[in-house]
Length: 447
Image (cartoon, rainbow, N blue to C red):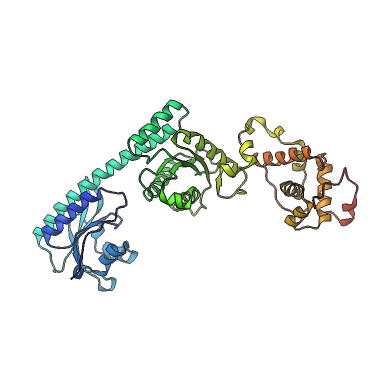
């Protein structure tokens, strides 16, 4: 018969080589196939199996890396296997493709860490075998527990050093970057992307509660383990999550850092039960850890712009694609106040005709091309020219003047950043006769 040699699913949760040696020794000592799974029933290690010893359930976990489904978990729960304090026999279920097996809980210091399984063809396993299996489970538990503690230490160290890399003090940033590389927590000091993911709307005071931050941290830790070691660092704060991702990781190199930002959004959204849409993410590139601080600041500014614009730029936004918003985002708008907005734009904002602002914005975005603007608005060019004449009258501007058009365009962008909003509307349409009224000057046609 064909013999299945061990092949381990390493997800970064344990020192797999050490666990594999424990499982191999157990298989030889007990003369039965042994498998070790974590508390979520994911395979960590298994001893050599003869083909005849494989039932469909074990074959699926070994050959196809398929985890236990809901029906199988329900069978284990119904027989108390997942709550057992001592090794116990779980009866087989031919319909599920499950042979009888002994389940030994793997614990350390009262913490359940996984399960040790031994295929059992007899109606009742010997007491001596159960005792030996319990002893082996305790050994595996000690290894898993120690690794769990070490992971916690490494996680805290990564968060502390990332905080240092993002600190205001240049010396602290340099020391933290050197320490990350020295400890192997960052793979190499090459190009990277800073990603900032919003966790709470700007209107929510205080951001996420502590337990919600822990949930987000766990989701991002799961994402980190899917990349090469040292390719992702993350830090969770009440209002945002900060990630540094190395562009040297093969997956990121193939798909791009925006792909990883989208995955981070999905992981965070999936971690919450409220069904909220995925949060927005902003990115900015850096040459290495020395410039990660600046890249993170740019990404945060990008996120604030994206939030202020209400998704007009999309849900994953790059600083490098902000255009003029990148410059405007550096202005101290909170100190400048509404006076920073062009007076003509302020006059239009006071009017109960949002279609005028929308028309002006589309017209300026189209570089004053009337034909393109009318097509984008789905209106006749006569309607467009009437609206633009009304804009000139109310705003006190001449759209034939390039300087005035530029000032209006910047004013609209500042108004957006200030949280003002407007959109297409058909309210206030004027009769065709009124469209022929005289005006301060016909806007450039551009056609």
